[in-house]
Image (cartoon, rainbow, N blue to C red):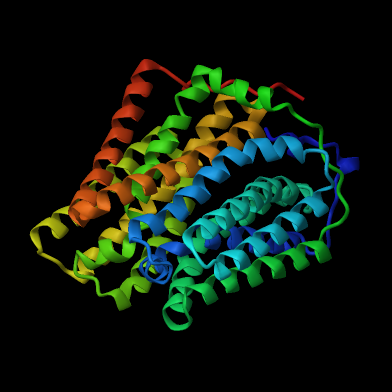
Length: 408
């Protein structure tokens, strides 16, 4: 299991209030998740302000995702020995400053540069918050503490993005990014106030982190994460024009984003339970099939002009649920394949998530000019490819027999 969970009892740091201390950490992951996905709600408005195409403005999402994926293992190596409170507070301050710079950016190049800086802050904070949460609570509630912190990301898709869309609609996209900056700084102050001084950990060489990629059991899982997230985010970053093509008025986009986020939260929770009960493969098979069906149905609606906001809402809910169903199941597979390196493989999975988001956003931007039906169709095809890849690796026997953790 996670090394941080196996510390001797004498070294544990307990905090009055149990899980209360992790809620502040979850506020930070909520800020990170909102920052990562908020642009989807006001992309056309941003493009008009910066005098670029919607596809070009969407590359700010791609750059954030790719920068996160690349920087996460590098920064984890470089910052391993820093005290945890200093590291987390500093990461949130960087995130806040970067969002303020994004809000003030006069052109696309400066916006892109600020998104790289924001990705650096996010790439340091999210893995660090997950590890620290276990040290802040009693041993008997550690698993729930981890769930609370990770849950901040999925709640951001349900609340942060729609609220950002509303702020962008009524106050402007610059104000919306400014509010994310303020949220990041509030979270930084909360982490500084509530966290005890915790030392850093041992430095793990970047070469050791990347050596895990050569293990067949790991190498067969991570590409599936990339494919699954790419399928969803081929459309998600361009959801305003894409939803308009299936009969959703621009003013109702916020409701659709809320439905996507509600599906994401529900899918994440159900996946955790279902994976424990029936195993990750059944969950992933169902998730990718549901995603392909939802995206294909939306594509058919866009192509034929036969639209219904009600049906679109149901499909968007299914789309969001199927997207985030895959994360707990994939993490389960990775930890089972390499239990002694669980923190490393989970961080690599996080990088794969953002590689998938960046790849999907780039593909969606390229397909946007051909119309929403083509974009939905491309996304559905990638979801089918993910399903085929899952079944092929299952039959080939890659990554399936868990490696037992050493006895204590």
